[in-house]
Image (cartoon, rainbow, N blue to C red):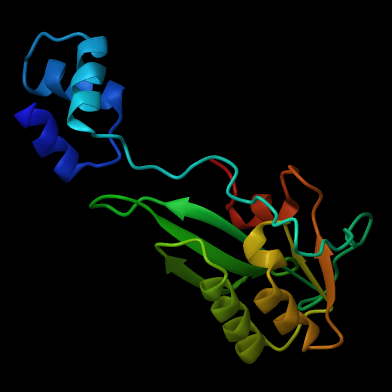
Length: 184
């Protein structure tokens, strides 16, 4: 249990299988996986990891139509996209990465890391991109609560000429594919 506690302090994202391999291979201790699970439960240790489906919409927030079907993207600032993914820092835990890209040039216009999934850091990224690169004709996102929040939408509406587009629920977005975000 002491070894498990030490390893958890160093690598809090290790689950039962990794802890079991650590004991079996690194420490040469013959122990079953079920026993490792029992010990971890007894100690109250559970691996830290992001949960699935990070892009759940808030039912109180508005949803906008998808405007990009069949649209040919032929110039910079025509369409921007945004997405969130998570990254694992070298030491431990994880952080959330939000990035805004120009779909035409595939240039990352702005990005931020955060240890929480609130909409505040997403609005900061949007403000930074608008300040540095002007405004897009269409801004596309998924229906995640960060992008449907009042703060985020009101910031886009303040730009007046920007059309808001949202991908359908549960759909792998072109934004995700182009930016490398959104996948595991």
